[in-house]
Image (cartoon, rainbow, N blue to C red; front, side):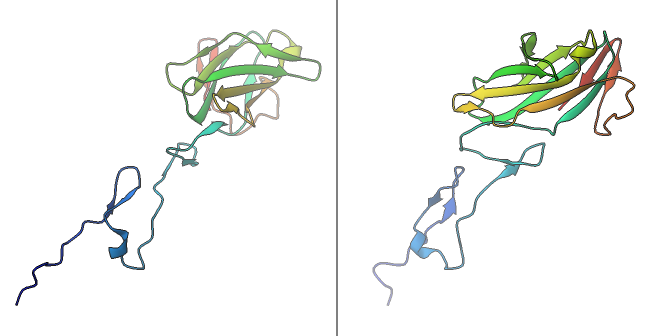
Length: 171
């Protein structure tokens, strides 16, 4: 004789926002919630739905450029929320610390570009790029060490493409 209330099959699953739907009491004991994640270009975990201050995508770079040449520096950060982001570039050597004003934001979110031209030996040092969102400023800036072209201590991690008198560097 058939039961007047046959067992109903329930669909158990996880929706696009990793929320469990259905009745969890029907889940086997060995099934546990899991975390969905993906990796960024730099190999870091991309945190969807979380909030954080900006983080530099790449390691510090050493850039070799001659006096009068222009190096195009790209500062790329990840942040949630990523809109709006503000960027500040700071130059530091043994004598000065100076805010650099002539940078531009790229149409790509999380990117600021600086065309930097050293005019004398005092223009070699460290350029730091700081990004900030509504939660605050990044704790560690993106760093570029600017050295004179032809110095023997060039970094092997240096990437450059020459185009006329402009050198393009990408983080």
